[in-house]
Length: 223
Image 1 (cartoon, one colour):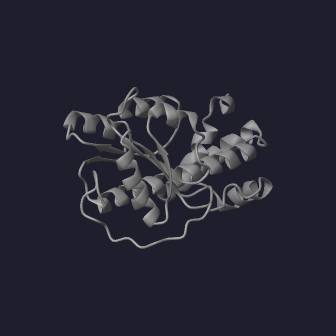
Image 2 (image 1 turned 90 degrees about the vertical axis):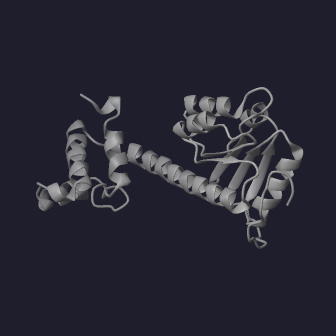
Image 3 (image 1 turned 120 degrees about the vertical axis):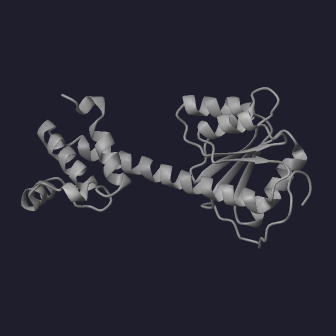
């Protein structure tokens, strides 16, 4: 494979489906775009190509897990400027940066702003594939959290202020299993009355309990 890509990674053909993850590529060099398309499609990923940030911003975000492979230096809006705009819009899109210049301050800035990886051309194909996989995993997690929050909001909307207070206390205790100073009986009774929102593993373990607590701390639930 030519252009910016270094040594070849081991890949085998994959059949793509409409549910396959998608890599969004922004690079003003057509040869680089095509090389990246060939690489990603060879491992079963769908690819959408853009030659500028403006063109990308006009496109609709895919409904499947996706990430952005972004060149730092672009005509018009730069890759870093696009990253900042996405953050300002609260668009959670994992980014893997590519650059032809090993600029440490720029790489530090990109990573602090949430980039998954910052690769300097030429790079190993496997390094890029690994970074893209990490970015797709993060997007899957983000999408799962968004879906969970939608469910939580629907359930919390049906609770009384008192029930929300009790639920917040239970969520805190579920997040700290060594400090469970509550009666299981009363917890189970509350849970039975409110659709299993407490005992469900979906809601009350690890980051799921954190999301529940975050939802209950929304301004409209404060009194």
